[in-house]
Image: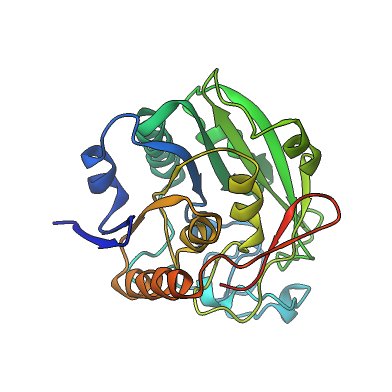
Amino acid sequence: MPEKVNIGAHELWHGDCREVLPMLADASADMVFTSPPYNLGNTTGGGFPGKKLGHYNQQAGMKARGGLGKWGGGGLADGYEDYDDAMPMDDYIAWQKDTLRQCWRILTDKGAIYYNHKPRVLDGVALLPLAYNPDLPLRQIVIWARAGGVNFSPVAYLPTHEWVMILARPDFRLRDKSASGAGDVWYVPQEANTEHPAPFPLALPMRAIESTSCATVLDPFMGSATTGAACVALGRRFIGIERSARFFDMACKRIENAMAQGTLLAPTPAGEQQALEL
């Protein structure tokens, strides 16, 4: 059974989002900011050592496969803790669509889902994050421009960006006109040497949350609570869900530490806010 831990106003659930999301009330969050596991274990055009590598030797390391990056993918070679990240693709797509439907139900009438995923090449064909959208209204695609990449392959050019799809209710609005100035391409380097194998950088949810007036933010794939740390810094309420006991404990400690540190923001000349480390 899922277990809920309250840390101040924040609500952290230890359990599978497929079990926890149906327990959350309708219209109980103003924003969803999340990034699911990418199902990388089923890759056909390169991938990680020991996985299905197609035309590569299965024992080949990253260097032998054409490149070696600062942000290595070795931590994901076996998935996440007790999850191998290698679903049959049809099952994975169905899971993501169902998750987004649940998130949509939980949104308020002025809310939006910020869904971070990456375009992939699978069996020589582009698989875009649009495949995971269960026909919800797509307001915009924000491009997260990363600092380089690791998926070197002769099948396709090295991917150095990801998407943040904004699936929005009709009445969703940014905080004000100036918030629109963030643009639709966000140049944010990924974080290196992190305890969690695949966190998105803190600056990503910070930019999204700060640009809206949302009061409560949900992340059904909480991981190490990067979204939660952004919520604490910006004075918003956080609801997070994580199935891994190790990552859940990590998330609880991060929220506690962030609350102890308080709001750590510095103004920038562009009128945005820059997050310091939480």
